[in-house]
Length: 191
Image 1 (cartoon, one colour):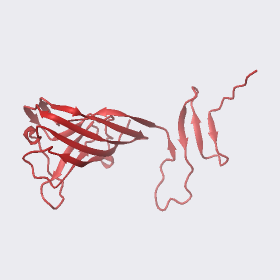
Image 2 (image 1 turned 30 degrees about the vertical axis):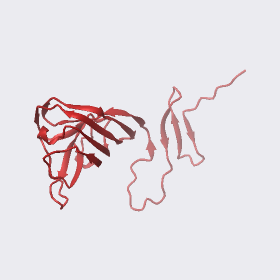
Image 3 (image 1 turned 120 degrees about the vertical axis):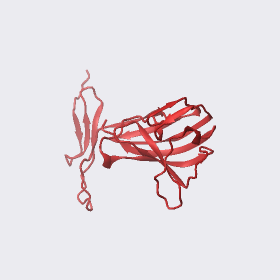
Image 4 (image 1 turned 180 degrees about the vertical axis):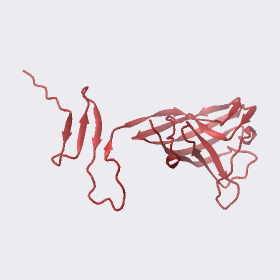
């Protein structure tokens, strides 16, 4: 004879932490203990209801339109989504610049989730290493800035040593014929 125990929640003895289980047996959420002293922070949630890991295909393209593309030798990046925060990392490498026209700012496209619709939740990506990626540009610092409610980030750079990241390019000829970028970043999503 066998027995089946059906539960919809497993709690610690404090009654405040544990697992919430769906009818099919999967975990719906994990509730963490509430912190007694939040040191001035406002705690809005202590329940994790979403976790996902995966891969996505990143590409450099232009915000408005373009003709052609880069010939990628590697453009698969990894992501981890916890709740509504998406973190990603990886590299892009290309062996040919086949663009023949471009309009709008240069962007990193194909983000795995649409960015949040709230300007205060914008994210970005750091470029840790760039090997012969650009031509005709003087760059002191470089990064990507996430666009609201989009699946792309705009390339920004500092043209002067003061660190002002106001530069961008809409000219496909500023991308070298071959190059590599190592990058990592994070942003919020409403998904």
